[in-house]
Length: 192
Figure: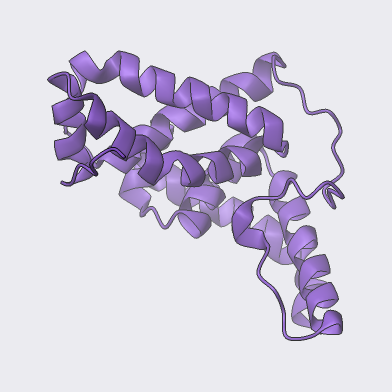
């Protein structure tokens, strides 16, 4: 059994830079699921999200020699993940296989599988959740990325700006437009 390497993410990445493979394993085990969930929300396909996550961590490993902790490690990591996802969506290498959003095969992200108190509550919550995810998925790519990073990964405006390589005011504008669109599309849910 491997020993768990401790330290901040930036410290672990600096150890990876020095050749410590155990530190990379620790970073991978800590961030793999959140990155896959983020990518899933971007591409809406579990198999593609897994494949893209491998690409993200391969890029992280390849960039180890040039890594400098100028921003939070997660900001740097999600910048890489965002670029990988947007490139995949744009060039169609990983075109969605028109997988239904109510995926009967259970390929949803793990965090959406929370059991509800009873069947009716579960069905209502599940339907609303999928409706919200469909609305988020229909947003333009950069707006979608900003919303996912803000709401699901708790990044602040500065971190999102660094991740998306834009200004904080551009992030505020992206989020404003995205939330306004979502508010209009999902207004009927608030009335229930």
